[in-house]
Length: 333
Image (tube, rainbow, N blue to C red; front, side):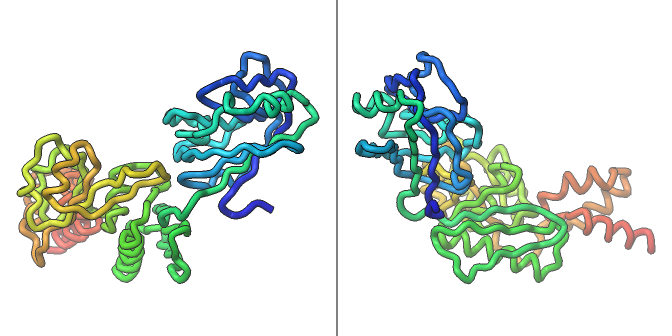
């Protein structure tokens, strides 16, 4: 039985295998190939479902009976899809068919005896993919009608946890969900949301609550959102003073992996990373600097539709529930 952190692909040889491609190698589920497929090393390949859970840098072991196994290393493609072919590339191309990139092993690296053996259609060919070293914690976040909290009892650097957040959860559940986010952040974890959206992944990976927040084109607008976490790509030239008094995180792009990882930074260091996804926490304040209730009343009286109003003021902390409570109060007065 395969180890939980490895997967084994099993195929067979074919008379048309040439193994001369210097940039890739491939195992395909197709029953036959032509001599033009110079990167293919096995046909009729059965992919291991364990591949879906593997992450990070891996060891590749290519084996066939009676010959010394060949090994190399590669980095799993976080955008991969389990299709009918597994392509391992020397380059960094991240298309869906690519299982791994930055590979140290290609088809052309096979010794002549090994490549010749793979032309036998009765010969079994296996590729073992095994994780190297620990991975960062990974938190998979979904949004649903009810909050579901993962158990943190045995949380370590190789665990994958799932968190479901209910948008209208009571305060106790909100606090518990935020505690999970803070724990993952403290462990240097990564976050992936069910529908990939990088700004939201960045916010959650910084340990911030998912609502409200603003996705800004420029950090200069931070002053208008003092109590709201904000996400943006750091512009080429930014004055660090705009982040005064606020926590700041920048995306950690040091490794290729699923989801988004954020690391705490300083304003001075963050402005030196143009183009990097950035999260700025809310300002420390016990009171709203703008009376949203008064603003909402004025705009409602002016005929602005409630849906439009909540979309416009959500970044400032005015939720739909809060607005409708206000309108109900107005109707009763």
